View 1 (cartoon, rainbow, N blue to C red):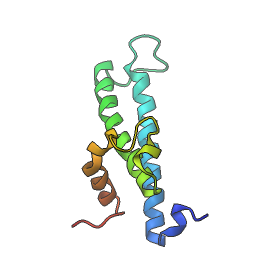
View 2: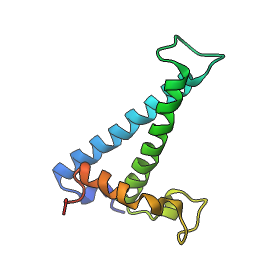
View 3: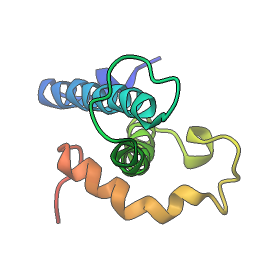
View 4: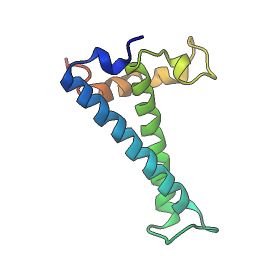
Length: 113
């Protein structure tokens, strides 16, 4: 079975690897922000106020959801396969179609029209 990376040219493979690394970086930042949101039982030192960490965490959550959906689309999956607890007909990711397309254009997987 051919994987998604094997289908692409050398430049597209590099873009794919960079895209995965970008998602991993954002996910690591989420873990940091989750800890910084705590007002009690904080592990380590406080680097930012809890309210700022909460705001950034919420914004990054939406970005990550779109990034994960774009990654799934690149791998050839449907929305119901990406987030399995929804039907394909009325899937909530459909409202993010334009954002997913914008991410794919930004990371050079689609051509801008």
